[in-house]
Image (cartoon, rainbow, N blue to C red; front, side, top):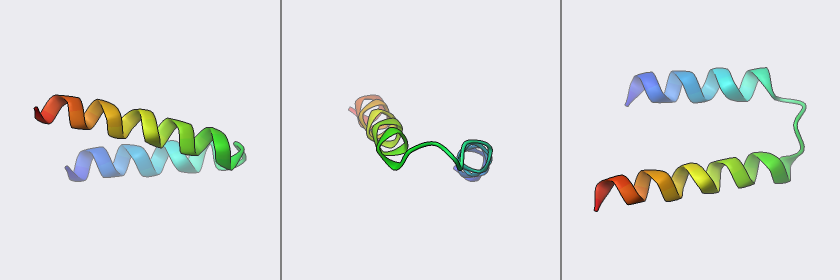
Length: 39
């Protein structure tokens, strides 16, 4: 979990200039992927 958080933070820092909508879409896609892995 901590590794994922570290990589996500690194990703966010690298693309901090990306539009909020794009980041929101990425997070939504990640959430869908994460949820699909749990079932």
